[in-house]
Image 1: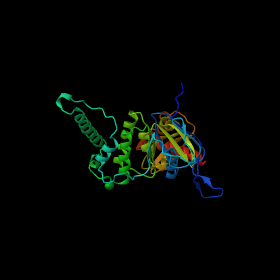
Image 2: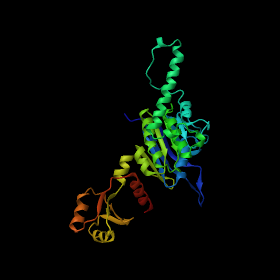
Image 3: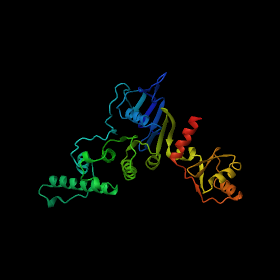
Image 4: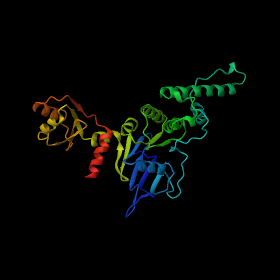
Length: 336
């Protein structure tokens, strides 16, 4: 039995246009189907395209086309933020004087935490004691979560003292504990530092284990590869790819290998006439070998060619198939 998608979009066009004659919509003919429990990384050549699409999904922007969330049609002219969706699109947060732990305690007030019960005979007021214990346990778990993410240094920091990207990640933590089944994290304009970027997959993993579906607008293909099960790639407002990360990597990343050597120009000149089914070019002192025809012969074919030619490069690195390379290949094909 085919799974019913929780989110579907057909022929979505934005009302925003680029200047020109005729003016072109920023988004055009976007189609998207998302099932429960999936994590989508939304990537575009300009952050505005990603931002705009996720604003439409979050009910922040009007649009043209058909958009359904949990089977309910969203009014394109008067959209509103659906109650089933936790939308994060700004670093501004309520209660800026709260510290991070206080804020997370506040936002998880109604969250059902599992905890070890107590013996009611030990307390005259069992109900009050149980509520107090719940609060203590919740605070301990939230602090442990911050520690596991490497963000414990934020615990007692007021929200107003945090950098924008730190507030965005704190909001994502709150969303992972929420009762909302869908999270939209819309920050394609942010280049998260490594320590924050490393925390995002861990937070999303927790959200997924809690049955949530997550959409993230990001500018880093490597982070998308680390966090997402699926990806949507936009160029000039049009979809170049929509589907699983695995298919994106293994079908669309055509780079076979990188060859490094002090005399890379000589190796390039020697291999070019020998590998006619491959495209070769030099980038940053490395020779990149790209499969033109989706052959599955590497490493044997290319390696044997290098050895037979009497070459001994400093290093040959097999490409592990990445999202970054796949995006670049799709863009290359788009520009032809």
